[in-house]
Image 1 (cartoon, helix red, strand yellow):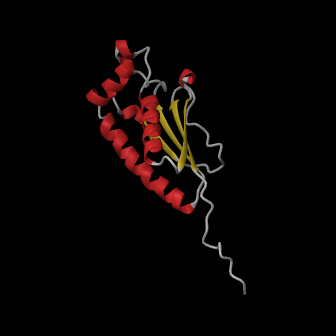
Image 2: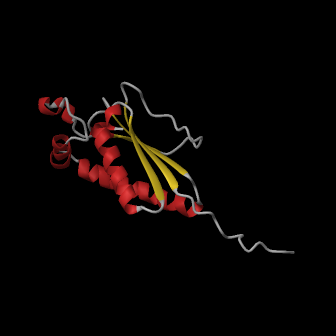
Length: 147
């Protein structure tokens, strides 16, 4: 019997990570078009909403004022750190097993402040942590001007 020398070789493709921000009121949880039918959905509505404060209403989670508010006046730093740890466990496993897709979605009431912030921050973190192992795309369903 001839043994394949490459039996234990896995072609190293990058893990494609699609991150979404969305509104529970307007569009709901994004569909996973990869066919995997899974991933993570994080509900950001437990974090104080900067959209309820007049000066932040027209802004998004991409604006410095909203980011400073979320980082200093809410539990957002702890929330996003826990998500980073949880998602990293899955990413490490997916990479080791040669999986090619993971979807992560963040929802809040309007899809403007908290979910946008989380999607941006997680995307930056993953690109920094896994620069050679993942392709990260971030899509803001309710904020197309940020895409």
